[in-house]
Structures are given as structure tokens and as C-alpha cells.
Image (cartoon, rainbow, N blue to C red; front, side):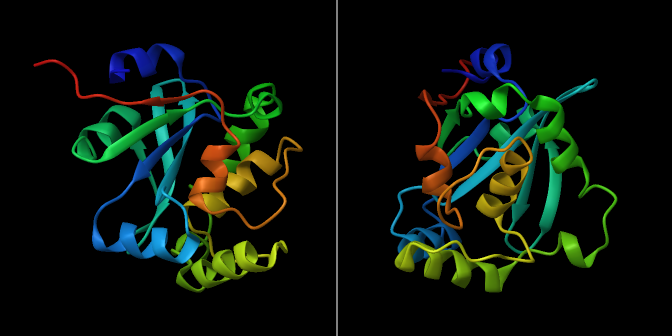
Length: 174
């Protein structure tokens, strides 16, 4: 699927996923035991489609989805259709995601300690609450606004596994 195909299909609540090969991606994949290292939430705004995410070293950010894909075009990208309950409640997902736009600087920091909590949750099978967000706990929180719950504190792979279908994003023809 190209970005043009994605743009036609994507709706609020869907996810973009990365199988990162960089140092941070490899560390996240090693800690979680998953093949995915990053996820971003898609939100349809009146001005276009945007990727909302928490990024290591940056924290919360919003990018046009086209720019998000362009910046990561050399990585292994996936477009993931959100669960039905999430898709049926786009306003709740968008409201949960947008609340970070104007929130305190501290709440927008990347949650390095939360990575450890995600790892512990995956190892113990228990849901461990996090204060500072990482990419997957941010998506999990936004999906939870619709009543959709995951059994543990989510890692990127768990977010992707909740989606169906999953499509590989291929570079646009030049």
C-alpha cells in the first residue's frame, strides 16, 4: 500500500507502526520481545490526517501523516486498522489524543521509566499504570477512551496485534 492508498483508507484511531532497526528501536524490541518498536495514532483533523505520537527524546508531537511517512520511508512501516470499537468512536479517540496538545510540559515528556513498566507488564501479565507516556501507552490510553481495553500495559506489538488488517506501506513511485 502506498501513502496515497493509506490516505484514502485511514480514519481516526488507526495506527502507523514501525519495525525499527535503529539503536532505540532495537532496544525497545529487545526489551519487549516484539518485532515492532514504535506506533503512532492517526487522527483526522479538518486540515488533514495527522500522526499523534510520543517519541523518545522528543516527547509528544503531532505531524501531518504524509510527513511522518516521508521521514520514516526507509524504515519498515505498517498501516494498521484499529479495532471496531475504536473505529466506532472517533470523537472519543480524537479528544483523548488532542488533550496533550495543550497539556503541561511535564505530561508531554517521553516516559523512559514507563518503558520499564511496559516490560514488567509484559513479563508479569499484569497491567501496570504509567504516568509518563511512551508511544504504545499513548495509543492504549486513546483507545481506552472508547471503552477498548488491552489486558496489559501495551507495547507496540500488542497495539499492532489488536489491529486487523495490517498493510505494509511501500514508497511512492517517483
